Amino acid sequence: MQQGDTELIKKHELVGFELYHLKDDPSQSHDLANSESERLQSLAKKIIEKYSEIQQEARSWDVP
Image (cartoon, rainbow, N blue to C red; front, side):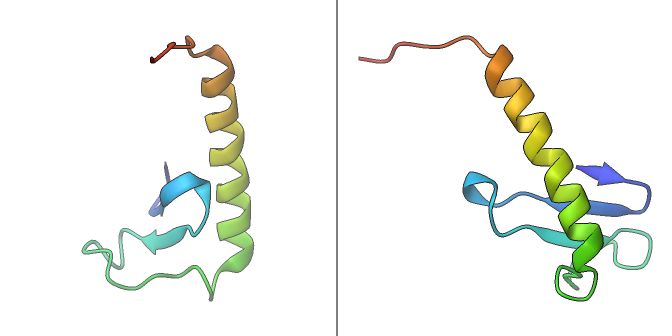
């Protein structure tokens, strides 16, 4: 998920997020998750809510 110059990258099962400032760090080599924890939490909440919406709207596939 991208917001302005920052990008949030989801890890497995929507836990362990990484946060990057794309304008200052286009190669995404400096994770800001610890130093910008409030922004991380705000974006993580948004992506979890969006994921939940998508899951609710998604068709259920019965896999044998």
